[in-house]
Length: 267
Length: 267
Image (cartoon, rainbow over all chains, first blue to last red; front, side, top):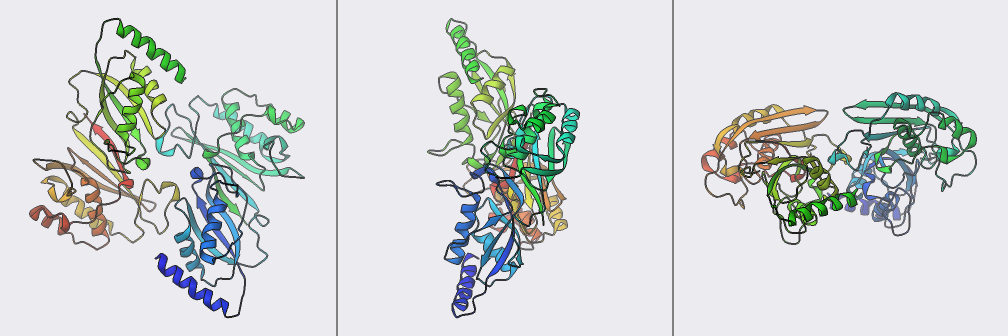
C-alpha cells in the first residue's frame, strides 16, 4: 500500500520535473483525537497537529509544505471536522490524495475528504460558521472509555438555569470577557453566537455552540460559566455584568479542553 | 483527598497493630481501558493490569497483596466489568475502600464497586457465566475516536451468513480448535456457549458471546471466523469440520484484541 503510493508520487514528481509546473490548492477535511497533542499550532519541541501534518506532507513532497487551518484548537481539544488547505505541485486525483494522506498521517489524525479548490480559497478566511460540541459526564462515576472526551462533573447541575444562562450569551456581543487573557486576537472582539443548546441523556450533557467566529478559550469559558451557574457557584446575572464591565473574572472557570470537539465548519 | 485516605489508613493500621487481627476478603468490580496494557497477568517488564492494581494495593497496605481475577484478558482487551478478590487486614467500610482504590488506581483502571464477602468466595472459581462484546466498524472510514475500541473491517460483510455460522458455534462443544495454540489450559476443553448474537447499527457491528467459560483467544477466534465467513474467505462448514478434526487452521483469523470487551461476569 505505502509502497504503491510512493511509487505513484515519484512518477508524478518525475513528470513535473519535466516542465509543466502548475500549483493546485487542496481543501482537506480532517478529524483528530486531540489527546496526544499540545494543540493545533506548531510550538517548539511539542507534538502538535500542524507539525504532524506538515511532516507527512514533507514526506510526500520531499520539501516543506505549509498548511492553513480554519482555526486553531487548544491542547487536548478534538476535531470531528476541521478543514485545512495547502498548495501542491503533485498531480494526483482527489481519491489518490485521500489515500496518500491516510497512509502518511499518524494514527490519531485522519482524512475524511480531499477537494481541489481554486487558489483564492482560504480555510480560515472563507469559514462562515463553526459549531463546537462540549461533552460533560454528570454522574458520580466516570465512564473510563470516554475519559479523554468528557469533562467529569459529579455534582448535581441545575440544567434549567444553565439553559437560561445560555440564552443570555447567544447573540452579537463584544466577547472580550469570554476570551483568554493570553489571547492574541487583536482588534474587534465582536462575535455572533447563533445558538447555545443543551441536550441531556443518560447522565451525559452536551452543549452545542454555533457562531460566526470564536476567540481563544471562548467555548471553554462559555461552558465553564454555564457549569458554575448550574452548580450555584455563579449567579445568572454574572453574564450581563461581564459583558458590561468586560471583566473575565466575573465569569466561571475555563472548562478542560478534553471535553471539546470542533464539530462542523461551514463555508 | 489523597492525604485524607492515607491518614485514615494509618489510623486503621495502628489499631490493627494493637492486636485484633482479622482478615476480610473483598470482591471488587473494576473496569479498564486495555489500550495501555500488555494484558491482565503480571509479566516481566510489562505494564499489566494485575501489576498496576497490586502496586496500588501495596501502597495502601505497605506490604505486597496478591489479587485474583475472574479470568485474564489479553493485550489491548478492555473490561467494562471485571471482578477481582483479595484479602486485607485493613478495616475500612466498603465506601471508604471504593474511595481509597479510586485514589490509588491509575487513570485507565477504575473501581465500580467494593463488597465484603466471606473468605470462601473466589473471583475465578465462583464465576458462573461470562459475557463478552466485540465491536467491528464496518464502514470504509474508521471512527478515529473509537480506534482503540473497534476492529476496522472496511469490506462488505454477509451478516446473514455470519448469523448462521454463530448458530453452529453455540452450544456445548470441545472448543480445542477455537483456542490459541499457546493456550496453557490443561485438561478438558469442553465449554458451553449460551449464545452468540449479532447486532448491527450505523455501520457498527456488535457480536455478543455468553458462555460458562472461555479458552485463551476463544472469543477472538470466534469473531475472526465469523468475519472471514462474512467476507467469503471461509465456508460455513469450516466450523463443523474444525470441531470434528480439532484443527485450528480450518478456522478464521484471531481478531485483534482492541475490539473486545469483557462485558459482564455473573456469580
